[in-house]
Image 1 (cartoon, rainbow, N blue to C red):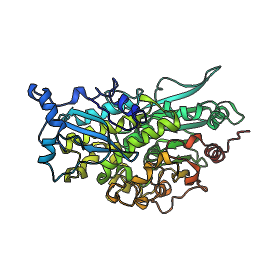
Image 2: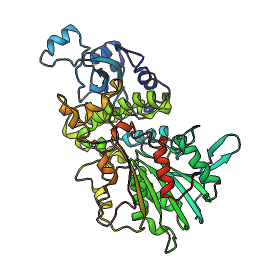
Image 3: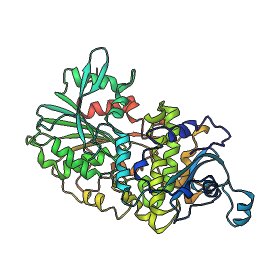
Image 4: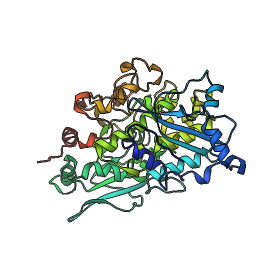
Length: 468
């Protein structure tokens, strides 16, 4: 159930609509704990709505998305919506300022259903992967006269030779979304694909790797990728976005022996906004604030990239992950349990920027099976646009009075720490060339790298592909 009480309801209308949409609101229906009749009464609902925070032992939970000075925050219970009697009882617990955008009331997930619920999120984000096993799929790009480009049905495993171009998407995304960033009319990526598919130096095939990003770690994705390309030879070029860069590194550096590369062949890979040393967005102690940031990104992406409704995962994914957090911890608050919550979501845990991330630490010890030529596209997002100042509230070096709410200690592209994008950790592993770097004034952030002409030119130069 959702309710709305904002000063500007249209600004966050999509947050409300998507949270109530079929396929999102009912996504976890098969995984909730059973609720008895007494818990479902109107009076029980009213009592829950009067609480400042959730009771750890109750099945029914309530969380709220509130707006404070133009920034969205997830809060436990319903801050600022207490009855007069409840206010007197909780005088020592002042209500938060701000406008209520929406309220979610839901049963906690059953103890043995959390992993299945995470798998359901992956299936909702990517309808190509296998629904029961969340197994990855390989798809081939083809040109359709008069209709541009489209992806094939999933391919069977087979070795490839000749020239291969491979795309690997990031978290909350899929192959179709990544393709859309390149194929929209008048975007620079459309010309790039045209040359890659039919130019004088065209590739023999262009492949997209569709994979789950939450219920399995990049290592599992890399293992699947290694199997899909086992025995392949020739020239392999890769474009990876976000966590896709970790998948590619694990594939080449740990499982690359499945390839049959010639002695003089070198895989080339452009990594755009990749969390090579993890991302603070997935740090366990930042999870509540990280989900708040994700919801703000949802509104930002809707208005600036024209991503609406279910096509914009940032509008709804935070609310569903909050349900997982509250189900495991009992409440949306800082408790010792929160430190281990990201482990419930392997795809996030593997990207957590903490010193004891054993998965990334193993990757950073080397050596590499395949000596790849890596290139990087990076950004530090900042804007003085008065309508989009939310970014300052999640960055420590920009905060004045909300230091406890920060996600990033320093520069970032709204999703990944900037310095992490080029930090391989392996002493002998460095970029093969200068990175393509965007500064705050460029307005480039995590989800619009491939809309930039400079990014496309950089990729083409890295792969020696003539766009003229």
